[in-house]
Amino acid sequence: MRAALTGLTAVLALAGCSPSLPQGVDEQKVNDEISSAIGDPNTCVLIGERSSGKVVYRYNTHSTCGRKLPACQGQALQTVGDLLNVTAKDGQTRATSCDSVADGSRGVGWASGPLTGKGRGLVYAAAMEGDRAFPGRMMSERLEDALRDAGL
Image: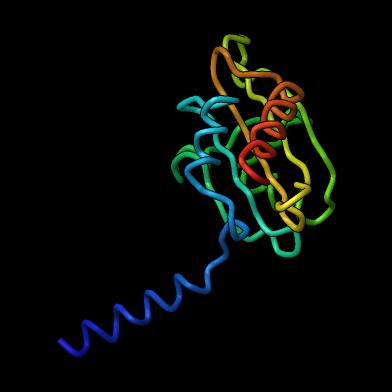
């Protein structure tokens, strides 16, 4: 019993140290705003610390967010985490899109950039892939409005 309590205490202590959204920002509100703006089963949004790229919020599953998709620049593939890390390092806004399959029947849109307001010190990265994926510029506009509406 004592070992179980010690283990639980350690897990809770680590959870308390893990990065999170800024105080006063409701995670459910962030989920709802993203769902309304660009939500789709093939959409991933990550928010991370500008200083380290450490993820503080994820919209969708690890599987969806871990997919390697065309980066829309040359032949490279990337994940949303890759884009988050690049954006965390340089703080640049990005919005690109391209076909994700050779026959052009599916596309991928990418958007990333720094957050302002309560989200200062954070960056976001997002990807949407599918036969009706939004272009990167549209994703960027919709997502930035949604995150601002959510308190970021």
